[in-house]
Length: 530
Image (cartoon, rainbow, N blue to C red; front, side):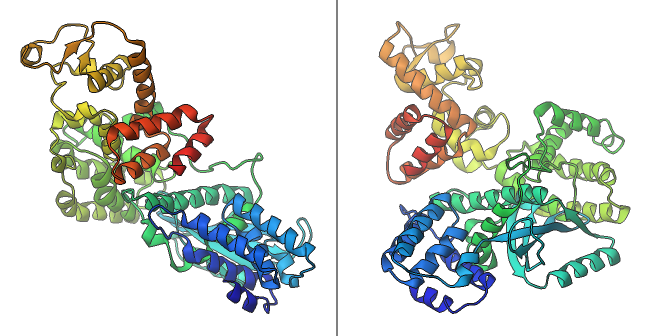
C-alpha cells in the first residue's frame, strides 16, 4: 500500500487522491476472517506502518486515513501519526492538505413513482465553508427501500451540471420519474441511516449470522463500486449540516402499536376489504403487511409497488414470519385488497395499481412453493411455536429457544399460563424449572406430571439466597435475549456456541458481561470483544 501511495504522490488534484485512497481502503471492506477483526487489524496496521516509515508516502497515507477513515479511532490515530512525521520535517503535496475539505452546495433526490429506490445526489465544492465556490463533483448514493434502506451503489462524477440537467429533463418527460431538491440536513439524515443499515449488513456477515430476510448479504455488498466509494461516502456525509445538532431519521416516523392498529382498522372497515371472508385471518395478515412497511420500508406501510410486494411475499414472509395454514392461503388476497386500498391513497395512478396487482398474483404460485412451515425441520409442534413466537417473529426463534428451552418442549403443556415468558412470574417459573427442576405453581399439577413416576417437577420447599440471586441474574439475561436487545448479545452467544462452548458456560459468561457493563455502549463493546 505504501508503494501504491508513492505513485499517488504524483497526483495533482485532491479528488483523484480521495477516490484512489477510498478504493484502497475498500479493498478489505466486508472481508471476514474467523476470529479476526479485519477492519481493525488492517486499518490500524496500515496506520502504524505508515507512521513508522518516515517517508512522504507514509505521510500521504496518514493524511488520507485522517480524512477518509471509517471510524473515529482510525482518524485519531492517523492524525497523531501525521503530527509525528511532520515534526521530522516531512512535507506532503498540496492536494494532501485539501483531502476532505469540501463544502456541500446542494442535495437532490431522484426516484420513480413507486419509490422503490432513491438516488440521493450530493453536490460539493472545494474551499472554505461559507465562501463562494463552484460545484466540483457530485456523489450519488442509491438507497434501496425494499431492502430496509441499504445502500446498493455509489459513484462520483465531475459533470455536475450535465447530471442535474439530465435528471430534470427525464423527470419532465417521464411521469413515472421524480426529481426534487433536498435540504442538505435532510439528505444527511437519510444517508446516515442508509450508511448505518449497510454497515449492519456487513457486520452481520462477520459473525456467521443468517442473512437478512430481504435485501443483499455482506458478500453482495463487499467489492465493486460501493466498497470502493464507501469510505469517501462516509467522509462526505459527515460534512453535511446536522439538524438540531444531531442526526435524525427524517421520513421514518415512529409507528407505535396503537397507530398501527388504527391503520389496520381503517383498512378492514373499507370497501376493498369487504370481500375478505375471514376477518380475523385478514386482521392477522394485514398486521404483517403493516409491520413490513413500518420496519423495513422507512415507515411507509401504505407504499405499494411490484418490487415491494414480491420482496414481501417471496423473501420477508418466508424468512421472518410463521403463518398458520389459513393465513398462508389468505395472504395474497389480503395483500391484493391492501394494494387496491393503499395505492390510490398514496397517489398511484390506476395503471400503477394494476401493475402492482399483477405482481401479487404472479407471485402467488411461487409464494405457495417458497413458503414452508419454518419450524417443521426443528421438530416443533404448533403449540410450541405459539409459545415461542407470540408475535410471529421467526427470526427470534433460535435465541428464544436458547433463553427458554423448555418452551420448545411438551413438559409445560399442562399449565402454559404459569410458564408464560411475557410475565415476570412465568419467566421465573421457567427458569427455576430449567435450573433446579422445581416448579412454583399456584395450583398443584394434575395428570401424569403430578405422579411420583415423573420427578422432574418438584415443588419449591424453601428459598435459598444463592439460588435466588442466580435466578435474578439469569432472568435479566433471558429478558434481553427474548427481546433481542441489544442485538450484539445474541451475536456474542452464537460465536461462543460455534466455538464448542456449552449453553451453561455461555450463559455464565454473558451474565458476567451484563453485570460488568456500566451502560449500553459499554455493554455492546464488551459483547463485541467476546
